[in-house]
Image (cartoon, rainbow, N blue to C red; front, side):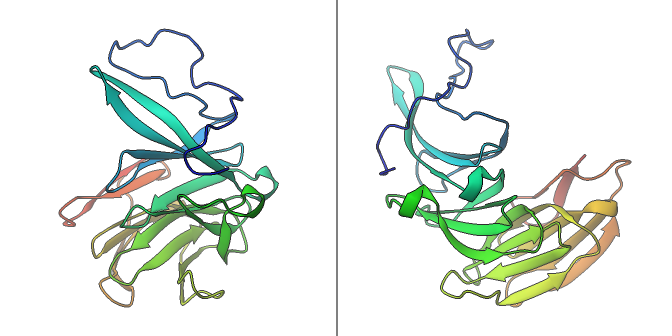
Amino acid sequence: MPFGSPVANTVTAAGTNASCAPNDHNVAQAGNDGISSVIWSPNNNYLVSTNWDGGVRCWEAQESAGRIQALPKAQVNHEGAAPVLASCFSPDGSTVFSAGADKAVRMWQLGQQPPNGIPQQIGVHDQPIKSIGFLPASNLVVSGGWDNKLKFWDARQPNPVGVIDLPERCYSLDVRGNLMAVATAGRHILAYDVSGEPREHSRKESPLKYQTRCIACFPDTTGFAVGS
């Protein structure tokens, strides 16, 4: 649907229930299933979520009389309503990249309506894709899949410009500056220098007892945090 047009009112995030915190705002039209990722635009008040119902949704956060509102702006959907598991913005905030159970890496340029409401496919894995990020130094999208691979994509080319084999399925990845941290099944934690061609910097076992579910780089890129 066109960017800025209201999304069809299929469901609301929490109906009309009162929030447990008076300053909270219940985001309307949040989807029909579980939310898998939530990201903010790096330079606008745009909020994007991905959902197990196959939707990628965008809201604009606005303040009025001291109250915050999230206004639905637009929505696209992965092919076959396949669950969408991850998303990231381009550095300029103009483009959203998403990936999920349809095994595809997709690109949505905000303000443009893709054919049939399905974002353009720019990459593919052999298994579902669990995480995605953007490498600002090389202007590449990186995707981590359950096929035990990291793949690097230039949106102008149909084939990956690079592939790295992982020791196990990718569960989470994060990119901050020239640091990329990757968590896989088997409690593996890998760090890469992505200032140029990606280069493995370190590999270790997670100190946590259970499988890693999320990983995030420190803002100053001196390390990363993991959670399970």
